[in-house]
Every structure is written in C-alpha cells, then in structure tokens.
Amino acid sequence: MSSFQRAIVCFAREGAKREDEMHDPAASRYYVGMLRNTADSWGAPAKFFHWVMAALILAQIALGLTAASWRVSPTKIELFFWHKSTGVLILLLVALRLLWRLANPAPALPSGMPAWERAAARLSHLLLYALMIALPVTGWIVNSASNVPFRIFWLIPLPAIVAPDEPTADLVAWVHGGLAALLALVLVAHIGAALRHHFVKRNTVLERMLPGVWRTP
Picture 1 (cartoon, rainbow, N blue to C red):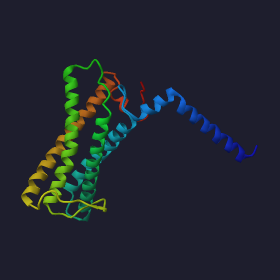
Picture 2: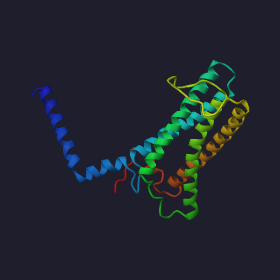
Picture 3: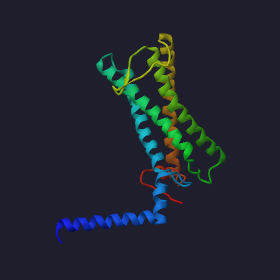
Picture 4: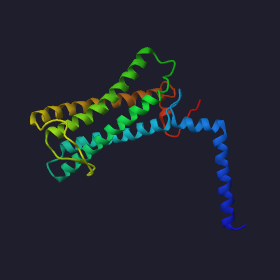
C-alpha cells in the first residue's frame, strides 16, 4: 500500500470515528458540556471570557499606571492609545459575557459554604461586573470631555458622549482612578478567595474554571 493510500485509509477511519462520536450519547453530552455551563463546571465560552478578560484587565491596569506616570512624550500618547483601545474592547467583551451569562446560569456554589460566604461571593461578582463597565465608561467620558479625537485601534472613531468641558474631564478622571484602585483591591480579594477554595477548603470552585477541565452531567 502506498503512502497516499495509507493516508486515505487513516482519513476515512478518523471520519468514521468522529461520526460514531456524534451519534454516541455520552460523547454528545461531553461536547455539549464543553460549551454550556453545568451545575458542576463552567462551559468553554464562559472560561474564554473569564481568562481573556482577566489578562486584558491586568494589562489595562499596567498600561494605565505606566501611561499616567510617563513623561509627556509620543510614548505617553501611544500608551494612552492602547489603554483606551483596550478599554473599549473590555467593554464590548463585558456586554457579550453578560449576554452569555444570562443564557447560561452559573454553576452552583459548594453546598457546605456558609450563608455569609455565599453572599460575599455574589457581591464580589456583582462589584466586578459593575467596575468592568464603569471603568471604560468613565474613561470614555474623560476622553470626550477632553475633546481628544480618537480611533479605536486606529480603525473606528470613538464618538463623544459628553460635551467638551475641562472641569468634567478632571473630575471624572479622578473618579476613574479611584475605580481602578477599587478594582485592584477586588481582584486581590477574588484571587485570594479562589486560592483559599482550592488549597484550604479543597473544593472545585477554582478547578471548574480552569481550561481543559470539564465536568459533564
């Protein structure tokens, strides 16, 4: 048998295997479980939103701090450009994430969690979502009030949402910085709680959000 014939045979076998998996109820449940949230695990889209946004938010904090402290120069302008563009991207991802979250209820919290801990978990998540929306919006207001023309990633013009006004820009910039500091504190608490669940309480709260870990019903 030639190499070409062997390749055809292997391809046919692989296709037959995938077709069998599509008709296998257990395999179907597995693939569906990878997409949708279950009572025990987050689905692939939820994990994607979580980890991509986590990386963007950490990068955004670093960009904001660096841009604010950099001397006036073309580099400072470039840093603020990336900070603003990333902020708009985060705002878009938050909207998509919320839509997906409404369509896919979150996995249940561990049954042994005290009531105060459940309330704290829900409050921290609500605060995270509120901050992920408020920070880009306040940044947008600052840019509009400063009357600075801006294109998102050099492509899409960012429309103004308030009239140019220097006092408004200064006030909202101060609020923006305070919200960023609050976000940093909430993130530290969020990460600390996840590590506590994993290493101290020994439950699956952290594990079920890790990429590549699937728990199907």
